[in-house]
Amino acid sequence: MANYFNVGKIVNTHGIRGEVRVISTTDFADERYVKGNTLYIFKENNADPIEVKISAHRVHKNFDLLMFDGYTTVNDVEKFKGATLKVSEDQLGDLNEGEFYYHEIIGCVVYSEEGLEIGKVKEIISTGANDVWVLQRIGEKDVLIPYIEDVVKEIDVENKKIVIHLMEGLLS
Image (cartoon, rainbow, N blue to C red; front, side, top):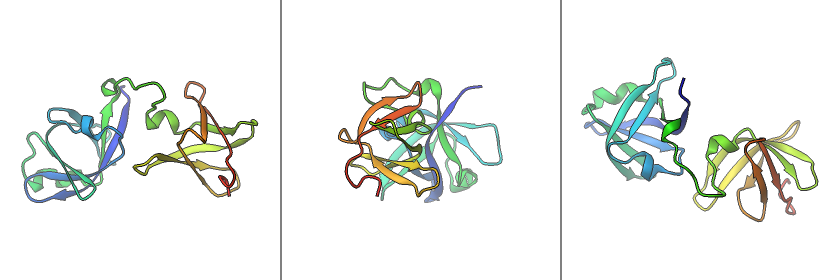
């Protein structure tokens, strides 16, 4: 079975022409939502994804608004509310050196330069300036780590290991 990766969540319909309002979870919205591109809609209760082709994309108030070929009314897309939009693994392009997909980072164990285990990346928040990693810690509150050169020193996705520099106040 093919692997699929999240690019967004359909949170609502928009207007009456079959547009859906999407909260994106991809760094590559411009590539993912280009006219003619194929996406897969996964509904919670349905294991089989619905394949859709993008017919239009625009940005409106921090949301991506998408239209799909063959879905031309609000009634056609109403059923997609709450569903997840994904791309198939073979649609993932090669990244530049030092760039990673979210699914490669989530689940990595984070260590200090001294070898102290700090936690596991459970979520990534895209802030615009830089991503922020949410680390789940054992017996302690989650901690937020900025994905910046001063902090993140080494990423080994093969071994699911990340080394960071503990700047003063980072964990407090």
